[in-house]
Image (tube, rainbow, N blue to C red; front, side, top):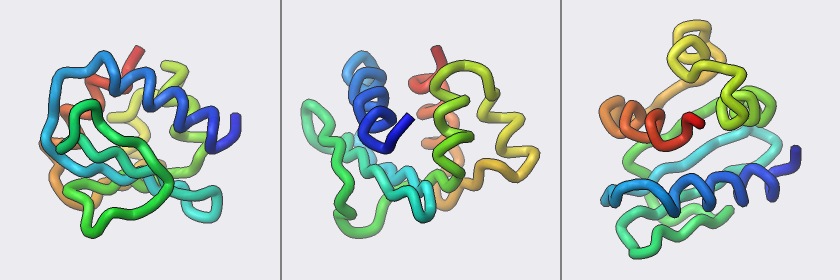
Length: 101
């Protein structure tokens, strides 16, 4: 799965999510970044940074693909160090519910 495929999947999941007024960055290291700006309606999803995000999730693209597919529990990934959270942990938990299948 490419960064564009992951971006499309995030757009699909965010579209059906309850509103959240926050900026979230998904940092996949060398594979790129995706920024979701929930302060807009509908939320914007881009590969460009818009200042300081409220929460940043750092993991490999492969780990995130597995989370989106439902084969990797994000809580387990976090405990194993495969997923790191910078910023609001509460917002990350809220996002967890949105991303799960």
